Amino acid sequence: MPRLNAIRSELWPTLRLALPLVLAEVGWMSMGIVDTMMVGRLPNSAASMGAVSLGSSIFIVFGLFGGGMLLGLDTLVSQAFGAGRREDCHRSLINGIYLSLALTPSLAAPIWLLPHLLNSLGVSPDVLGLAIRYTKVLVIGLFPLLLYFAVRRCLQAMNMVKPVAFALVTANLINALGNWILIYGKWGVPAMGAVGSAWSTVIARAYMAAVLVGYLLWYDRRHRTELLNTPVEVDLPRIRRLIALGFPAAMQSTLESGVFAAITTLIAKLGAIPLASHQIALNTVSLTYMVPLGISSAAAVRVGQALGRKDPSGAGDAGGTAIFLGAAFMTCASIGLLVFPREIARLFTPDEAVIRSTIGLLAAGAAFQLFDGIQTVATGALRGVGDTRTPMLCHFIAYWVIGLPLGAWLCFRLGWGAIGLWAGLSLALILIGVVLWFVWRRAVGRLGATGPAYASANYIL
Image 1 (tube, rainbow, N blue to C red):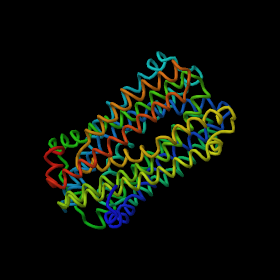
Image 2 (cartoon, one colour):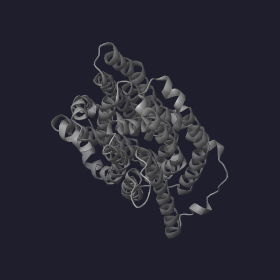
Image 3 (tube, rainbow, N blue to C red):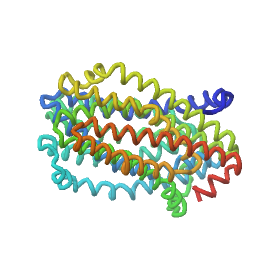
Image 4 (spheres, helix red, strand yellow):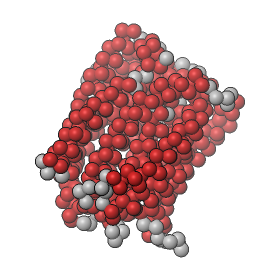
């Protein structure tokens, strides 16, 4: 654990940066929760929720890979900002946008293979067709989503986090209104059901990107930061550095989102009710995960800025305090999942069969909350020093070598059903949390011994 004096000195600066980011992450996740709740009121609620679960799980694999490729902006921009090099921050942003443009078609193309993939996996027919249509609509919003990711990472690395929170909170209002109009067919618009929810999500994501770009341009005009005077030519060495940092982070995001997509696909073979229950439980634990995820972004920024100031001790204190905050919140979340499972499930659906099936999954989710908090924030702290490879390796081994095979064996061989897959997921997250905590402590020791050169020599360059 971090020193008590370190917590006292770092607590408020970390919270001041983290709270708007937590609000933004909760806003991001709440869109999916609202989508699930609103399609859960359709006549075919189990099939509709299953289609949204399957389609969004598959899309997010590609979306988070693209977002992960831009996570190198956390390291480059925060360290440049800490060193007082604002033009360097702008150069990284511009080339991050170029990287987003290049990623969009390559990530969108695999979506068109979905019909063949899902047909071969034996997904329930009442879910399959709807899930394919839902996912193909989501692809339209891929570039706005990547643009939002790029501008957001630059803004938060320069301590401008309030517009990020504003964009996501107001985007939720747009998404909820769009859902009401497009799902149920209001104001003369034909009722589109679950597919209408996808269109509403696309509109909300385009809005988020527009808000952040507009704020950045407004800030530049008011404070004369010379953003518009930044050279716009492609900086290949900088893009290579972004890729070198971002690819392991993208792979980690893909491994994590991919295992959830794989679990969702396997549960889809069990029928609509287990799939709907899985979607409710997944939305719930994803919502609690948003808090340490926001703290993780703050940790990456605080650690990176400390290294930019050549303050390795401050970097260690910032990361340790952030991990402590994430672990403390997730402990409380675990208690909530154990005490109120029925009440949580009832928020999503009145279907008693779905509610009963959800309760066991929420208990499995409670088991990994603490460790999920530790691993999430430790990943951000390690990203601040430039280490994006270690979390990637941990996620690959724990999820794909241990957790998923064990879960599939428990589900299909022992007949545990969906709870078996969630048990494997729980074990994987416990392992990742323990390992990354020790990796961070080792990184702190090296920073104290060798200073900021540790990050540059080993990871950035």
